Image (cartoon, rainbow, N blue to C red; front, side, top):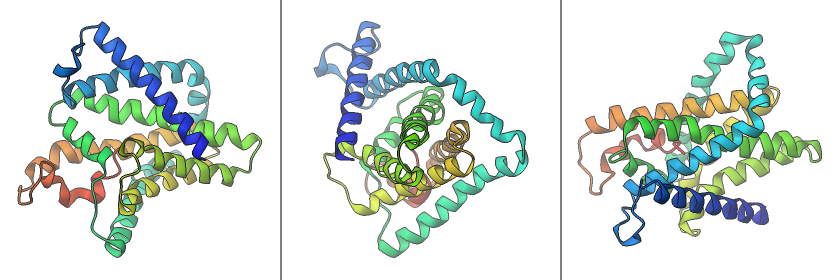
Length: 251
């Protein structure tokens, strides 16, 4: 597991470096790191990197993605309704677990995304978080780590690997500096998507749609609800504190 996460981190850093090089080459961000804005320019590098990854994923997996959507040929309506229902179940579990083990905490990954919403164009932010991220992450964590790996390893062993990898990779940038409570929303989401993926016949497309619904609701909360909340707590992301169990699933 440690080796797999380290390898994934290495690949991720390579893609980010390629995204940075391309963004600088296109004049989208300054070549001088001293003039580099971590939020605004960081978002640009991220979305360029995601664009690269989306192209790669679609190039190698567009056929299984389209084929997997055949899962909706039967039980179409209840499977569609299960998408928001699964999101709601995750929220309920988050609220219960977080109330038992401590106050909800905003992870570094979540805080960075929330900060990006204040400076990034909404359309591009939505494309990155609601379209690109689910596609890329589900290809890696479900289609590869379960769909492909389960040809040689028990599917539920693969599921555990997928859940742990999904959770840990969202905290790589912290250098291990995070609280256990911060992992709860990611674990909840990972378990929900993983179980849904397996029960739906290992449907890559279903996992992507479920992830998109989750991120779509979270980003809608950030743009439409969070600005209406009173800023009564200290800190730049104070208005989102009350929505922590809802927003923490964005990623």
